Image 1 (cartoon, rainbow, N blue to C red):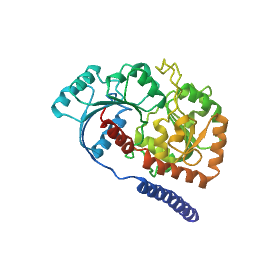
Image 2 (tube, rainbow, N blue to C red):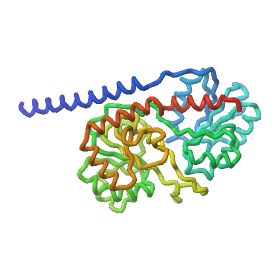
Image 3 (cartoon, rainbow, N blue to C red):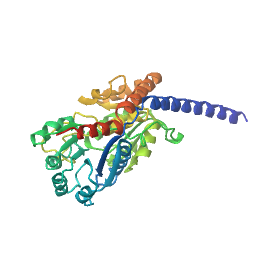
Image 4 (tube, rainbow, N blue to C red):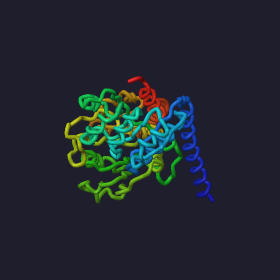
Length: 362
């Protein structure tokens, strides 16, 4: 009976703690979410056509567009998009990614008088491919600032910097399963720059509760030592990813390298300055993010106040130790990041900007 009472008391205290944190996060979300303004527009949204993992992006963007425009027509690159546009007469044809969209369809859309826009989601890593696509469109939106002059040199006259954001239908504060909770996690593919970082970092993580999930992590030279903390080959959907983010006190973010010849198609050698989509998704879950330094991060989050940056494995390890031992400071930064994200960095914010820019006379 004594053990039962002690367990009940401990469980009640833990439940109160988790519920209180969830309530604080939800209060921030409710206070930070701006009102939505619907525009008198008809948008023809052309999906990426790539399936998973792009399909969640398509779903989030389509759902958001339905809130922002009076009418949204959903098509895929496999459809006769130009014929559909000729019949429905949209104000804008917006293409995500563009890799699967037949170029002749874009040419035909423009010849019919339909304004066209593309939102490139993987710059600068596949600019060898996007270089031939960008000039086909009236407007080009890229999530990498350093790609703007690249596309302008190709003759694109209307190029805009537009990082991806977050779809709160997926990424938001949640109360995760107790079995998932831990100190630190990283979710992502084991690109070689990430392998090098974690090869150096992992011995410092040994005393902590940590989890790594993604493909190719058996590339670690001492993978056998850490395999019990690594979910090898797992590819999570957005809701599961969000649960993992919510379940850990700190989430590590490591950008992929712009010059990885093994995977990239970036012969122009365009460097990357802009934050990846994970930067917004982690912050939207109300957890502290430690992210490798990139020049443009400060345009979206204030380092040290809304996000924490690092420039080496040693600095990352030191900051992990610090914030895991300073809980109030960790929580304060996480809440400020959540507030900033829900106010400024959702799909509602990004697509509102896209629609407004797309409707300006060219």
